[in-house]
Length: 170
Image (cartoon, rainbow, N blue to C red; front, side):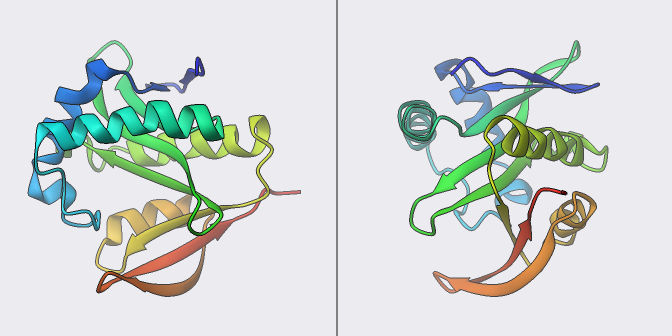
């Protein structure tokens, strides 16, 4: 997959194996992983497995997946954002996760907007979903800024998530 999306501040690009260490180190921060539902990544090998899965499954099988995100001209990997097909639900999910030092700067909103435009314009998707724990007020604020509408609460593995939906504007 050779898609690269630039925004005024960000480069969204496909993950490579060179991102494993930076992604692993980011996910070690409990404040970052507390609302992810996956408990963060417990070891380097698990992060490598996940990134290899994005490359070999998401990109190859579905033609899209989460992007590694860089701050243009300032930093290399600062987190990830983008779309992921969830075959167990037959929906495409918008997700994001960033290093703590980039929180509160509109990075998630900017990356989310670029991902939504890519999904609706390039991929011709008819709708997107997003999921956030009710306690994750910052993420819910980003989703509502992006135009997502709350649909319902879902409980999975003893965790409750709020499900949001977005359809293209006609």
